[in-house]
Length: 183
Image (cartoon, rainbow, N blue to C red):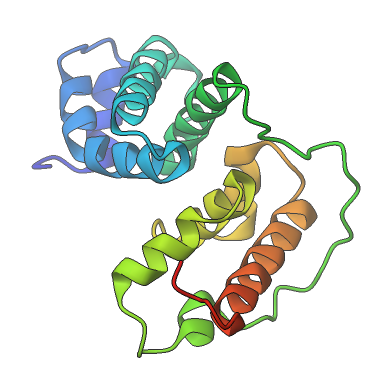
C-alpha cells in the first residue's frame, strides 16, 4: 500500500469508495488465509472473504478512526466464517460456557512443537483443532494479535480467549505426544 493505512481509511470514511479497493488489496491474502484455515474449503473461504469485504465496505462508517483497523476487519471475517460453518451444520461456538480467566503463561506453539517440526505439520496440527481453538491460535500467531484483540474479533470475553489459547496449545501438545502423531 503506497498510502499509510490511516490516510487510506480516512479517505474511505470521507466517502472515497475507490480507496476501499486498496484496503482490499492490502488485506485480501490475510483474510482469505484466515478463512481457509477455519473453513478448510477454498471455495467456502473465498466466499467468506468476499462476504467480509462486502460487509466491511457497507459498514465502513462504523469503523472508529484511532482504533486498530485489523481487528475490526477480522471481526467481520470471523462472523462471515462462523455463518459459513453454521450453514454447513458444524458446531462453532461454546460462548455460553463459563471459562475461568486462566493466566496465559503457557509456552507458545513454537516452543511446544520445536524447530524439528516443519510448517506443514504445524498447519496440519492447527487444522485438526476445533475452529474455536484454531481461530484463536491463528489470530495470535499468524496475525500477531493479543487476547484483547482476539476477544474483540470473536466476541467472547478475554478470559475465554485465554482459555481457548491454553486449551488449543494443550491439544497440540497431546497430539504431538501421541504415538501415531502423523496428523
